[in-house]
Amino acid sequence: MPGKLKVKIVAGRNLPVMDRASDLTDAFVEVKFGNTTFKTDVYPKSLNPQWNSEWFKFEVDDEDLQDEPLQITVLDHDTYSANDAIGKVYIDIDPLLYSEAATVISGWFPIYDTIHGIRGEINVIVKVDLFNDLNRFRQSSCGVKFFCTTSIPKCYKAVIIHGFVEELVVNEDPEYQWIDRIRTPRASNEARQRLISLMSGELQRKIGLKVLEMRGNAVVGYLQCFDLEGESGLVVRAIGTACTLDKLSNIPAFLPACNSPSKEMKDSDTDNDTDVDIDIDDIISDDTDSDTNSDDTDDDNRQRCY
Image (tube, rainbow, N blue to C red; front, side):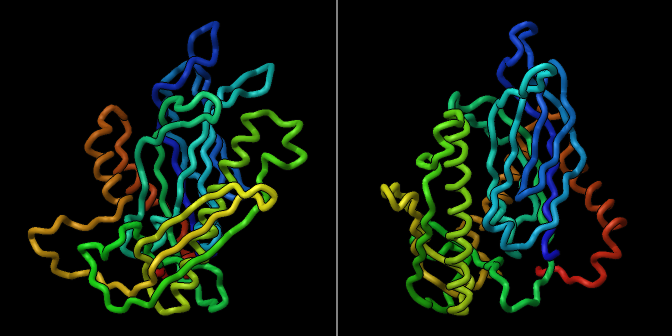
């Protein structure tokens, strides 16, 4: 496998009351990527659970990492009835898929329910390990950087401007499918939410493939537009300018340092989230040590694509 995704569920806070008898919640978490799902243990009677789960590991193709969002679902455990949904979190893995990016996303993410809105927060750590894929027919565009700004970022210089790129993705709107007549409003909303996330990842990957064909490594001025077009369903369009960028080795003192968004997020979360008893850096380093022992045999025949 050219890619390994690792996820750890650390804690939750400010969850809603789901058990009216005790004014508390018996929360647990489902972590899903593609067709694989893991579950944490149930943390009983708490609105601020501390799961500190094991590392959940997914071995996937790198194009799946670009298309699929990491889906985290927080639920309330019920013994004699169906578990109640608290909310979901979708995490885009794409910021971790190029060599200059941070290798970890960690921090507090809002738990969102399509009916009730924000319902607390969850602390998650996500790591990605990528390996070289020598297949020239692969459908991945890992390594292509995307910038929404209309100018070249200050920590890069433009070597070549290749030209304009665009792409279009169309899919049926799940709210107009026959199954929508029998499912709940929440399920219908979540089906559209997941589809939009999938289409966004697919579109970005296809734009990246066009950039690689032009021998570029970045897209500047990247813009996505979503439309509901009746019988056509959901339509997503993207445009941008394909470039070849080189990172400046010596950034002038008057320019701010250029870090990836995920790196900045990690640094800010480390400074601010002092209320979590678990040391995130220790967790990450412990996982790195364990992976070194367990994955030696698998990694001997593979090279990292950094």
